[in-house]
Structure formats: C-alpha cells, structure tokens
Image (cartoon, rainbow, N blue to C red; front, top):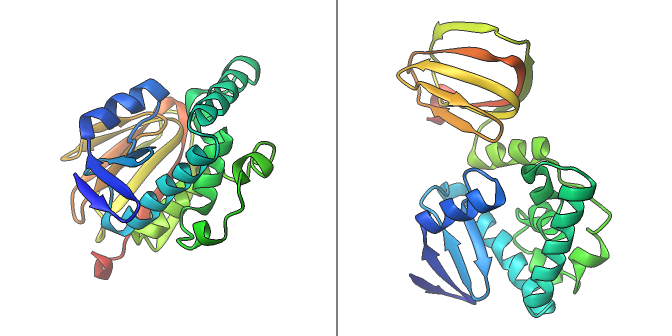
Length: 222
C-alpha cells in the first residue's frame, strides 16, 4: 500500500484477475474506487504514469456523480451495449462513456488540469473516438516499440521457426493463433505474447484466420 498525492495505490493482482473475469476482459492492470487505485505488477514502467492518470480520470467521474451515479451510468450503458447493441463484453467495456474519456486522454498527463465537469456525459455518450486497434497500437508505441503493424492472415497459415534480433510482441484482435517452441502459447482475442530477442519460435494461424498487431523492437532498443 502506498499513500500518494490524492490517492492510495494498492497492489492487488488476484483482485484484478477476478475483476477482469467479471468484465470478460484479459490482462486488467488497474481499477479505481475513490480514493483507492488497485494495480497489478504487470504495468510496464513506461506506462505507469499514464495508467494512473486513466484511473484518476475515473476518480473525477466518480466524485461528480457521487459514485452511485457513476455505477448507474456504467450499468445502464452495459445493458444497452450487451442486450440491445449485441456487443461482446470486450466491445461493451470500451464503449462505456467513462472508459472512452479515460482512454482518450490517459496519455495527456495535464488533462485533469483543464477537464470540464461531466465531460464523459457531455462528450462521450455519443462520441466514441477510441477503438481497440488504435488503442493497442498506442500502448505498444508508449512502451517504446518503434515498429507497430496490423496484419491479417488466412486460416491455417503456418510460419516456420525463426527468431528476431529485438523483442517482438503479438496481440490478437480477431481469430486465433498458436506459437510453438520455447514460448508455446495459444492466443485468442485479447491475448498478448512477448517474445524475447533471439528466441526461436514458429506460429500457426487458427481455423478462422487471424487479425493481429505485431510490435517489434530493434536490436539496439533491447
């Protein structure tokens, strides 16, 4: 537990894992319940300040709506996107007005200094600027990956064994893929794998194809 300026930071890996399961999400790194921010040890150092800023934006939303109102807005939007719009849990989560505002501004560390009250209700109920593809790409770039590319492969395509001079990471947007070798792992939507430099690996695309983002560091970036 750490007492910081305006919030309490608590590492709670197990809680975040269960919270992710409740929302139907993978790799949840943080959550806000004023005045506490729960975090995991999976937050890259380069992303820590931005992720904390994301949760502080939630603090502002929670205080404006006296927390109960925040939960009501979240619940109503969840019902709409799941039952009426028929969105997946992952899509539903990102379409929430509170998440749209937080993700749209998390990398601007001065945002809260000039934020207008009830911004999530005034701007983000109808306006949805944040989409998964762009968000994942920005996360990789903020982590320091100079090469970030979105790719699509046909069903059952295979990649022979090989290695990279720098760290390479994959994030699945649609479909599935499986890696073999020292980093054997099956990836579904929302999964990520990080492959260290020079590690041999091969891959096979799933039976329905795969759309994914690959991020690569150069040898001198390692």
